Length: 130
Image 1 (cartoon, rainbow, N blue to C red):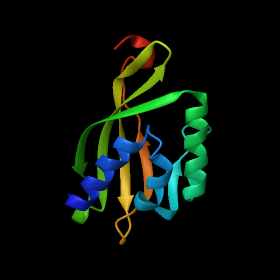
Image 2 (image 1 turned 180 degrees about the vertical axis):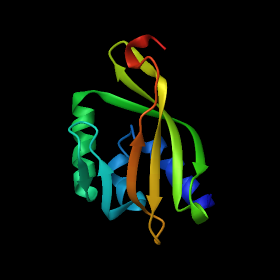
Image 3 (image 1 turned 120 degrees about the horizontal axis):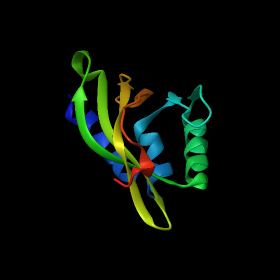
């Protein structure tokens, strides 16, 4: 996997739950990015739609994602699969899911993410106490 893609994805996960998230969007997502809408179903298109989607997620709770692994899954690193553990932060602290999911990223020629998909995992879920 190209080092630039790995560095971009690692940084994206580092800033996701911080105030740096919105400022980082132009450095990681293509202007016409295609993104899954896990709240309502369907797909989102463009940076503004992804920013609004993330704002909705944070208004509903404080989502957390912990990067657990990266691997190339395509020719010349065109597709990168990131294994993540999902969690939430609430008044009682952080709670992590027992399951992991895969975030599948496709990159454009400019090195920015043009599409992201989610492959669901299996496991007990966030409320399991893990």
